[in-house]
Length: 383
Image 1: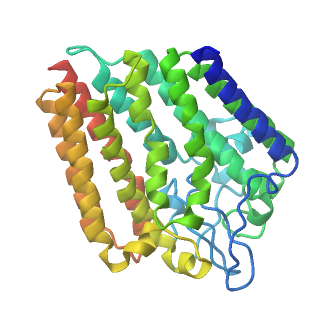
Image 2 (image 1 turned 30 degrees about the vertical axis):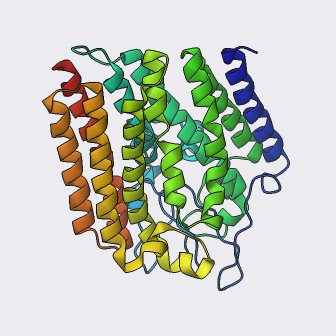
């Protein structure tokens, strides 16, 4: 079997198995049984798609990595997610045909931070792999950007299929398309299939090495939701998953991986994820403790800022090593310095006992990725 055929088979098998599971109700194949809350209600699965963790007066919920500061919750409660009327539509939703709005909500197109943190590692890697004195391959940047939108949207779609019955019971999530009845499960499965097929189409535009490397990330994607049940380090596993683009971007340009560049870049991304997702996890630490859901926020406790400082330092070191191995000029290190300063500001300023502030700091991480990318552009052009 050729590399191209192998990658196509892996991706197609994943699509078929997911469709079979979701067609029989989702929960029997994919949903993790959650520990009961203090009121006996099952708790919502951790999710990197939603804007904030589900919560209501009926009981606690495990934390979910979020999307938008407007979804941030204080310790006293959370407002409903998603618009309740056409007049409350925000962002891109205001410009879409009415029939398309629930599909866009299912993909969280109005909450782009999840897409940004997924896209940046690939953008960094493509930029560092560019020939000295030249701009990065714009076609690859576009493909990776579209891929981030599609794969993030597919993950959110799966999450909402799994949790559609639970979402009806939670004030913040009851207006989601499946929970509210705006869409039926077969609509969501159709959207999921379309997203995965389009993602496969993007993957097949890459070289054979990248096809196999990209398809191999499905193992991480498929097992990530399990981690919070078995380890206090689900944020580290998320880092392994969401920063895969640091490996794939270089491979897409060069046809192989220069490990002296991509490994420190990958490590830098993982440590960055540990910074922002631990901050995020603190907004639900009390509920997580009751629910029995594990996180680095609970593991680190009062020493969280010390740990985050270590991760930020390791991230900065990884970015620096990757730039040196790639032969970047001085603008790259200016960008890395800006990213380091931003992480230091987050760690110093965040109030880990204020859910709204944790969410705002989390969302601000799009600028960390942007500064590294901008530095990479300048560093390669002047190399």
